[in-house]
Length: 231
Image (cartoon, one colour):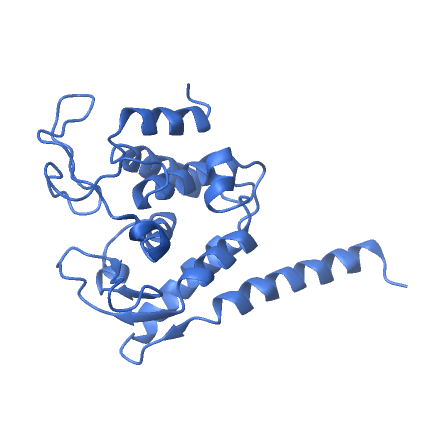
């Protein structure tokens, strides 16, 4: 008869196998170099291993529970293949080009060359996966205001590249767009990831706070802050 420890071990193996099988359905173009492919698979396996202690309402509405299997299923339901592309900018990390193929994600060399934390890279590809949703107009961005200043009266710049954001199509007016959902993902990992270490949680909090600044509609931002228990 199987004891409880054996049953628990077999259950964990089965769960990890489900995660791996879901991620392994992704197809990579031949021009995606091995290090780039491996980095992306490592990042997806990281998010697929997450265990959550709680879930906010907006996160539940977009992604489901703060759980690795939910994240893996969400991503692979939207993205079927990965290719390499410049994405039209020397500073781009990844993109979806809906008019070509809404279920294909393109990554650039910056995915491995930019020095960003793993949880930040993961948030980028989940941001881009949101753009695959043609039934929602691919969640196109709105223009950032001009001037676009932070709470200290300084120009808002990209945490990724340092570029000025004012007047650029790099903001959202809803919690459900790519920047909004990216922020909700990061904030929930910072607050509710039970098996993330302190560094991962701190990185998630840092990037969540920054990306929240891209949500420029006051009502949308207030809704998100309430969801996070900050109001």
